Image: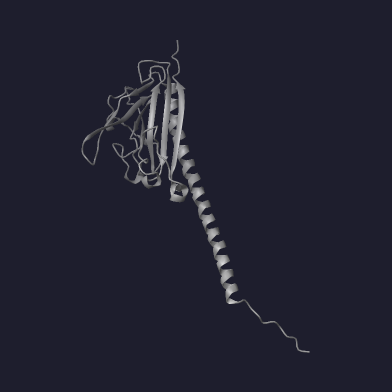
Length: 231
């Protein structure tokens, strides 16, 4: 007896429908994979920025705690290489260190220097332990850049909680440290906020969908008391 086999295959319509369904599933899978990747890199960006911000905060608050002179805001004189004009940046003497802050400057370690192209520098006080007034680039001995590549300090505020301002002559005071560190190029932030140094209008990252996986904003605050003198 000869058996008959059904040789009927898929129709063109069925193949088109199957291909369309497979394409949709594949597209959704790719989109999901891309979003997971963006979220991963977003987490890495935030984690790295938070680590750096914490290191800076810990260094400053440790110096405040061990300082007998509180915080001295004396400024930092430098020259803008673009315009050639003298520029005053924030310079502080805290404990045994000098801190110089170039607010909103995006760090590029491949073009870094210790006179203008930096984010926040930490250097030991001169050998005589006197705070230069104002601080000059030549006063910085073996300075260390505290920020990572593609980071900036949006603001660093140091406020004497008793007097309402910095007063280096008064000891045993409490200082509020308010620090914001950001990561990312200007395009990763909402228009007009990347270089904002206003605590009331801080930088804001775009949504992850808009490419802000390489963007992070970290703000830390701490209140630190100056250790009392002995005797």
